[in-house]
Length: 430
Ligand code: GDP
Ligand code: IMO
Ligand code: MG
Image (cartoon, rainbow, N blue to C red; front, side):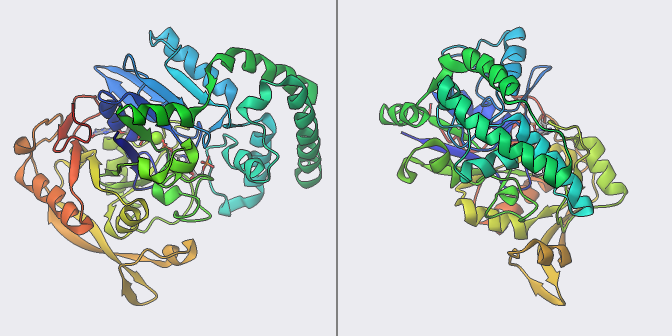
């Protein structure tokens, strides 16, 4: 009954979508446990590109059950749009999708509150995706959120919504001088969404538990990354959910003993979108080159991603937080042609060398990277499918990361497409 969690080890966009799509081949279920449509997971099959936001990246395979867990926050309009785009492209959505009845919904006032709050922060703003993710999780924790099951019960929904809209309208007016919402309009709109989504609502945890007991493979897809995790990331410059592997249990309703392994997804260099500290960031021509070659523009917002070298200090923290049993290294091909590859192995913090990832973002902001240099390679690794076919220095780079992190590389991605991948170790047996 293997259940594998695939989680980002950095600040998101590590290439989780591509790997989950590959691994989904041998899974019965692919499930998302947190985040919302702030995620943008890219899957490229032949020359067709799909960007998935809420629907698990297993949907492009026939016969897989895709589960949106209780820990996910759902904007129903965006989910329906994503479904319609997939259907129009020939991807069937029917009995292959289950949405947890306990998943919380993103409401229009969540987006308005987020926009107003961010604008007040000025230079200190988080630089969110503006999708209403944070405020939706705030309501969840404040125990006034609206869940999938609630919109299937109109009288209850109307009452909850009335109170929530009134509160949001007062906040928007008093704190930000922003316009409010008409509860009747929101009610009618969301009842329309409910009609469309009703057939997918189910008990996600039960569905997964049953599959595991039947001996089926379950693939659990993280969104964002460990350094954006609400507890273990660079708080407050984080997202509002448990992106690391621990979130899989609470976000799906399965016990920790059910999870067999967590695999980290590591980009061969580092990127970050939005605000917050980033010790190995390159503000120079090389950073620009990585952005250009790696196509480092957000899959959700189109914002340019900040780029920098690989950071072993933060990755060591991620390995520990998630208990990664292995990792997938992505975008190795983007490093082709460099004379030297730098990797941060320690920070200089207030005049002292440290290998510990600081607990607070202000300290991380003061950290200066201490680099080790490895020799680059001139050959192309683009599309390489066998370990033996990688240039020697590329193999040395991968081996060096394995040694530093104390875990092995399961997979190495060498291109965008589904088949541009070296599989060193299969996580699911055929
Ligand atoms: P995710 O959010 O972790 O799923 O990652 P994104 O989809 O946001 O960003 C990763 C980007 O890198 C996408 O455009 C992928 O198609 C692309 N990608 C993934 N792996 C590789 C790789 O090994 N090489 C190259 N060149 N591109 C890759
Ligand atoms: P995937 O799943 C990269 C970042 C935002 C911002 C912070 C908080 O594609 O890896 P939020 O809207 O979540 O409140 O924004 O988190 N962020 C991501 N960065 N990849 C993502 O998802 C992200 N989802 C959120 O840029 O800095
Ligand atoms: Mg992404």
